[in-house]
Amino acid sequence: MMIFIPFPLTFSVLLPFFLIVLFIYKNSKRRINKARLPSGEMGLPWIGETVEFYKAQRTNQLFENFFQPRIMKHGQVFKTKLMGSPTVVVNGATANKFFMSNEFKLVVSSWPTSSVELMGKNSIMEKQGDSHRCLRGIITSTLSITGLQAMVPRMCSSIQKHLQKNWQHSEEISLYRSTKMLTFTIVLECLFGIGIEPETLFGVFERVLEGVLSPPVNFPGSKFSRAKKARTEIEKVLITEVRRKREEMEGGRDEEDDMLFSKLVAALIRGEITEEEVVDNVVLLVFAAHDTTSYAITMTFKMLATHPDCYSLLLKEHEDIARNKKPGESLTLEDVKKMEYTWQVARETMRLCPPIFGSFRKATTDIEFEGFTIPRGWKVLWTTYGTHYDERCFPDPMSFNPSRFADPVQAYAFIPFGGGPRLCAGYQLAKLNILVLVHYVVTQYNWSLLDPEEPIFMDPLPYPSKGMPIKISRKSDN
Image (cartoon, rainbow, N blue to C red; front, side, top):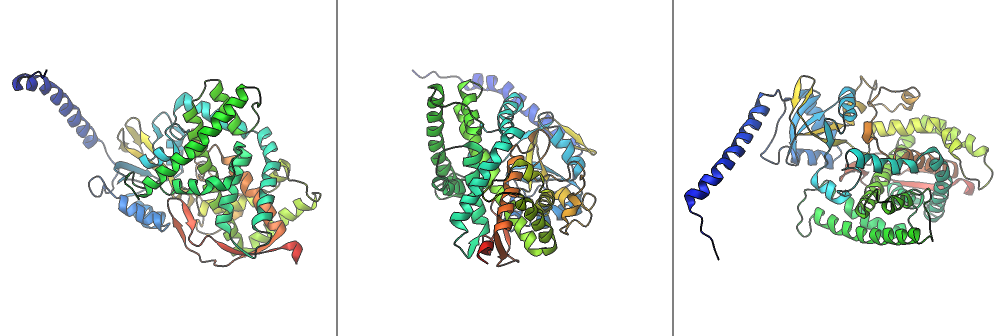
């Protein structure tokens, strides 16, 4: 039976509700208008300056064509609108320290909708407080000194197998594609210990990556739609692996070891985390640990190729280490610690060619910073370029000078791995991956770039447009 409510009665009931909403809205507008916002342009309605941002990103010119012109016009702190959200972009070591150290207090992680849906709503990227600390504790326990000592031989084995299979009988390879496949393999085999053939999932993960910064429009054929389908494929495979591992551990046929996948499933059994959290964190960490690392490795070799004096110093460091190893003997963590100059080269490469441009946060309260007010709910974007290319942090910033890292650098100035409570949990894995691979390549192969001027594009992360082809030959064959 339909009940008819007279219009005057309906109006009298709803009017107070509308007045309250209007009051809140006007107060919110008044609060923002009274605040001293940073200068800047908000661009078109809703879209803001997103088109300009994506255009600069695509050609890997975010600093030159988006951030730098606005810094010159408005200063180190400026407002804009990106992906539908009013955003304040902050630059400089002081800003990095302020926002990174106030994670969970003034700001929280706030990636675009597409990134969250594809990386996982239950991943550490989205977790706050106790949930974040629990997951981070599980991850970092795998990368303790003991964990790293056990990981180095496994990594040596994976790298040598990859080189024998893909490099040994080749004269030319795509360095970027080869390192992407290798780092993906290392994450699955050496970090997680998941018994899945990397080749079966590599292409699917690549399809997901294509959509992580795309507009979250889920219509057939769009990047986001293709990425969502690929994400579903990965999820099905991982859920099967999680349940198989859980059944074996609960049945006494397997036990917790030093692999991250085992530790996550053990935490699931103890009721500390959910199945969704296991899956989402595997997905996130595969991306975080392999894609940015492969770019860093590729650009390290490019810098070495174009700076032969640096390459000579690096090669000597590795030849000295190899001279003290027996044939076929794996490296140890102590050997890796001796690669000091190599790590200077890698850090200088990541300073000039950061694998990520920055990271988004959301203000959980009105924030007073350098005389400006950042309203609650606005996004905050810190950038690597804001310090990496700043001569106050790094004199002559556009020159390649690894020795600048021989001494400690200013805190919060070098931030390819972020900082504060959200410092990249896979930092040590990335470092090991870079150093161990460089060792085996430079001691076993002669190599040279085929196109030193190859352009770098970004979609959504930076990559060499031709895959960085290199000519190679085994040293033992000469």
